[in-house]
Structure formats: C-alpha cells, structure tokens
Image (cartoon, rainbow, N blue to C red; front, side, top):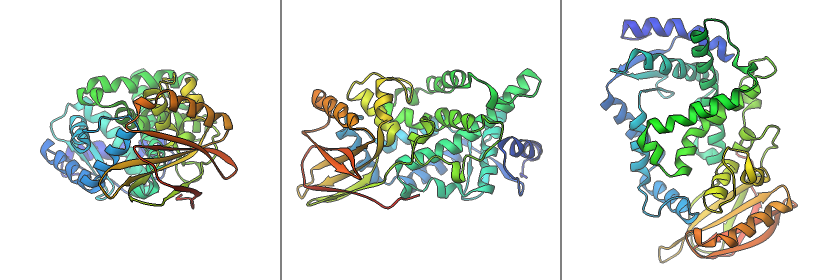
Length: 379
C-alpha cells in the first residue's frame, strides 16, 4: 500500500513472491512511500544521533586508534553520515514498519532497492529486527545478526534478478561457485562510492561484511534445498559463525580494572580480529576466513575490551582475546611484539587462563590490574 499508486502496485505484486523466496510468512501489506533526498538524509542524521552519540563515537574512535586501525583525529560521526548519505536510496524502517524510497531515482535502481528492502519488511513480520541489532548485544553479535538480515535479503534479491535476466527458474542455493561470483560483485560496490572507497578498511569492510559474507552464509544454510530461516536457532551468534562453517558458540568475557573510569566496553569478534591481524600486525590474509590471518582468527574463542580513562583524562585500552588453541596466543603475541610500533601507545602483553583456555591480555597506552572472567551470555 502507498499514497503513490505506482508504488502500491509494485509492492503488492512483489511482496508475495519475495516472501515465498525468503521462506517466510507474509501477514500483511507493507506501506511504501516516496521521500526527497533531504527527508531521507534528515532521518539518517536522527538515527545516527540515536545510535551513536558524540561521546560514544569518540570512545569508539579512540579504541580503534589505540589498536592502530584508524587515525586518532578521525571524525567518526561525520564519516559515517557521509557514507550513509552517499548511498541513500531508500530503506525499510522497523520503527514505522514502512519502506521509504528516494523519489527521483531511475526505475531500474528502484526495482533492485524494492526487491532488497521488501525482504526486510517480510523479515520484520516474522522476527523483531530491532531486537536483533540492539547495541546491548555487543558489536560482534550485532554484526552477525546484520549478516543474517542483509545476507538473506541480498540472496533473495540476486535470485530474483538473475531469474529475470535468464528467463528461467533459478535456485542460487544450488550454485556451486556462488561464493566466487558474489564476492567480486558485492565488493566492487565500494568503487562506485568514493567516500566508501576512501574510508579506513575497518569501517569499509564492516559495512560490506553483512552483505558479502551474509549472502554466502545464507546460501550455505540453504544448500540442502530447504529455505531455512537464518534467524532463530540457526542465526549466527558471532561473525566467526558467519565466516567459518560449524564454528562453536563463542565465550562472553568481562574485564574488571582496579582504577580509572571505564568509558566503553565491547569486543571485536573474529572478523574484525582478522582485519587487525592484516592491517596492524601485517599477517597475510585477504578474504574473510582465508590466509594466515584467517587461520589465526579461526582460533578466536571470544574477546572483550574496556577503554579506561585515567584521572588526568588519558585513555588506554585493556583487551583480552581467548583462543581455542595455545598456538593462537603464541602467534598473536609474537606479532604484537614485532609490530608494537603500529599500535597507538605503549604495549604490555601477558598470557592468562580463562575457562581452561589460553588468553592474551593486551594493554595499550597504559596499564592497570585487570581481572578477566567469563560473563553471562547476552544471547
């Protein structure tokens, strides 16, 4: 349904087909409305204010700067707003359960947008999308949920468009070389958007991950011929479970410090760990889960960090990485010491044991006494 008769017709025609392809129930129509670019950008700005306030943006910037992944003076909010507005063409909004599209985009672009975003509308009729991406679940769990959400919509969209192009039924879940085809197709998107192409790798690839690796994850999930929901019991709880088939559930950790104020606490996850290994520690890698960096990231069993602010306002990072194999700690520690100059402050490293596993406790820019414990699972 829509105040625009043309959008109403397109939506009514597409929704049942997309719901069937997505393997989900359609319970009611979806409102589709056209909006100006200024209106869409205004909404994105409000969402950014809500999701990433200034203080949190600075804390996350400081964290990744200490890790050597971004410059210490990066304007994170301005960068993200630029990235979002550069690509804005429309989106499904769970808060209003409506789909908003740019009012002046070409018809061909509109079709692809509707195919993708209407899948999100169907998803939201079956699960609470806003709960899956609640920041309280933690960075890695949210990124994994986004991979299920965006990968699902991307695969359905690709399948629909491919079928239209070839003129015969297509089941992308049965394409054996799907990964080799979808990776360059989606990764090449960054070259179409200058702001995205120029963004720090950790930001650029974190934005692309849900679409690229998420589509591959859902295709793998559907390989048995059944259109399993990527939510519920099969939803990945970590980026490790997105990238590595049959990965176990990770262990949630907590860190207690003896002094200073904890400004931020979160984790990187296996995917961001691999980027750190490649970008900062110069471990050979490339594609998620592959190369020496991918092999080392596969030993990740959980991680957690706290950004601590001292009484004089200085900030330093306390980060623990839990390994499934003792060799993970040794490889990681060797690379830390050989590349310590690439980090954003003085470094200290020690081996600790958590849940009978080796863990690396890394401090950057300062040092405090820290206690690492297993935390209750957030999911």
